[in-house]
Length: 134
Length: 134
Length: 134
Image (cartoon, rainbow over all chains, first blue to last red; front, side, top):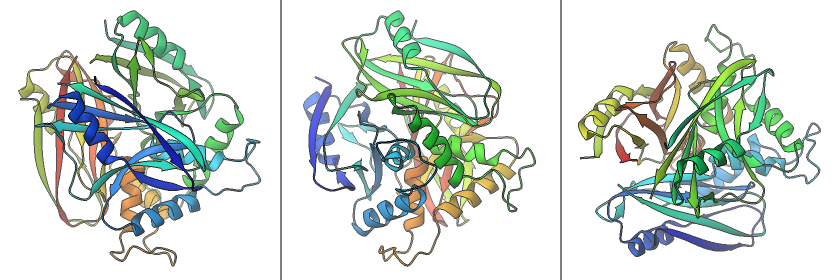
């Protein structure tokens, strides 16, 4: 098996949830020791990013900084659901990330975690992990 | 065959063009039922993103919001061609996206379409679709 | 061999370094003529992007424009290391890029180069290149 689906229940309006260990477990289950892994978010007001794992203040500053550049309210927005800011953040971080696998492990930097980014919670969310041998 | 090239004629200055059905057709032609697909934009003032497919107002708000953070004119810009804003948008959404394939179909969210994003039209543009089995 | 690691010594605070030729060399060494290549940055205050290769003013404008939207100082930032701006830029351009390979060559646009983006130098940095056959 080289495809995995995971569910997340997110209670907050915005949150970065580290999913690195889940991806690690999937790679182990796949038995693939060399290749790439794609982590995919099927939602349009959320995304996947890779960033600092040590100081949670980075997550605070990240969500704050992205909130400043993609403001919640603007007189020019047309989308009636009122969450255009979250759609823009989704495209800005991207729906997927690809990481290299070598010797059965992801080549992540020492400070890197993979994050599911919720921009319009609370929601029930999913993400997929696909491992390609090569 | 697992590589496809497509041409787009874009008449607008800025536009998001849904290319999901084209990618679906390519996957079918490839005969690959499990793997990943990379959609690639070879231009530096355009890009590929994945976002909402239902309400076209999201595209309006997206282009409006990105236009605010990457303004057309700024006294500090040096690039004589005058389209630095479009180069920045290109990097902000990214030149490619990778989507997972299972049972011959892309695992897209119900609200997701793949978009070619024009940021400096009108232009003749291309994009590539490459399908990797795995 | 289809995995390569490269070191960069970056003397500037911010800089975009073209690494396209390095990636080309790796693809040649791998002997893989059809597939995809993933270029990966293991740092959380740097990233990989694809953008204009002809006029270096685009790099100036890019770093200037990203500096405006992710400012260095803000009273709301909590991260004590003081480089939250660089973490945000890292996620905005992304930790990796994937390019298509055909006939032994990357399908890059005529104006495209692959750049390692330093947002918090001077630093010693690394990047990885992984080539997947397919």
